Length: 218
Ligand SMILES: [Zn+2]
Image (cartoon, rainbow, N blue to C red; front, side):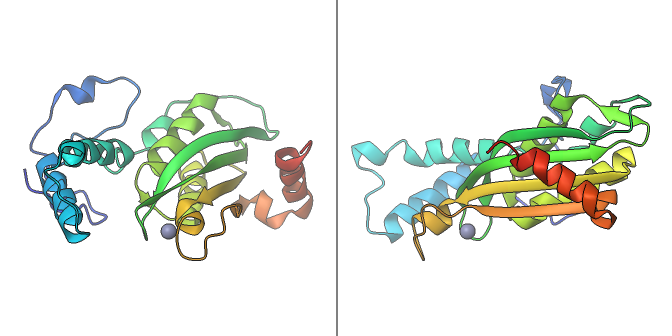
């Protein structure tokens, strides 16, 4: 299979429609990660830094790293919006807040993990989703080469587009290993991003309410 990059459109090779589509709780589009290609690349990196990829301890490493990347980037060929299309109709029009959804993602600038928590608050407009669906959305959006700012926006936009929410607030806090183990080496720094849409953007008291609920009791 070709390893063409899915540059935003859906034109990547979908040649192998495997049984993965039967998996109930995933929105995976069948896409086969080119493991041998990753393995070759990892071998090259090992050579390049002056290692011997054929010594005993490293022999299995390229294959292991290839499988790891397949897992860490498993959200790249999924469409998280399908999780929001299974909503139910409710008159409830107060805020729903799901706090502390833990995630791990890969910083696309350094290919190093950033790890943290997402908080999603929304005010429904007739459509409510199961709480686990929000966690699934975070899971799939984080399992791609990412930047935290974009991830925050993407989650908020999905709730606007799929649920037509009256307002949505997404706050993400994460520690970036590219900040802690290299460069400026600030191990304790936490990056916080937020995306406010609808009434959380226009209405200051709604915004303070959601921020208090997220940070209250800390
Ligand atoms: Zn980085």
